Image (cartoon, rainbow, N blue to C red; front, top):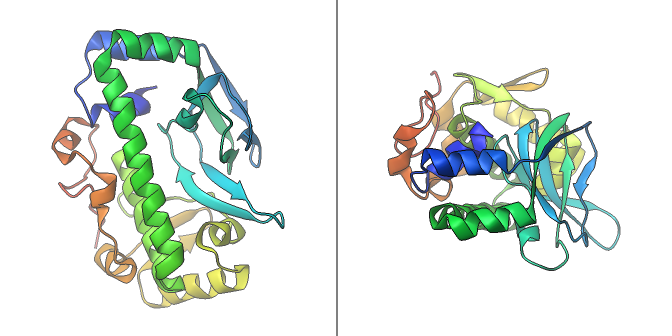
Length: 256
């Protein structure tokens, strides 16, 4: 749970008691393989899931059965906090790699937020961060070129993994197929492959197995028009996180 505590600690300074209450609220852990649904559209969950390890996504299914990925989820994310509000889930959550989740019952979360208003405020601000990511994804699919879309998305994933202390100096693990990348950007597999080739030829990235190596961070950021501000609602707290080279903008300091 330390990644979730670090994430929420970016919004408010949590006391030892608050972090212990949150950690103790996780009544069990669940392990799922890739391509497994954690929550489906229309479900009414009675617990929230925290991603402890792995890579997942939130998605919508359209009328013809096609999948639109609406956000990638990294370690430390609350995957379905929306379910804490009564009503059916409007999106699903699916694993993209083997994942481990902590399960926090809604009843426990309600008791914690009632007793600790700062935790409630941190969770509220976490939903604001999610809303910012969703808004950026709408702009990405609706107004950016294919080249810009993929460059921007790679910058976002790299930055979020760096904030969680999970990115390497020169890149990050990327257990996402080109097909899934197409589902996230509204592009065909062929188009995704072509754009990744262009990014490689331009000297911005290299793909090595299940990893993305970033050779030119400034170039990749310029290619996607990426500004990390939407990922850093309160950058003053970043200095309190784990030892990781993340600048005041929240962006990773990649090797040149």
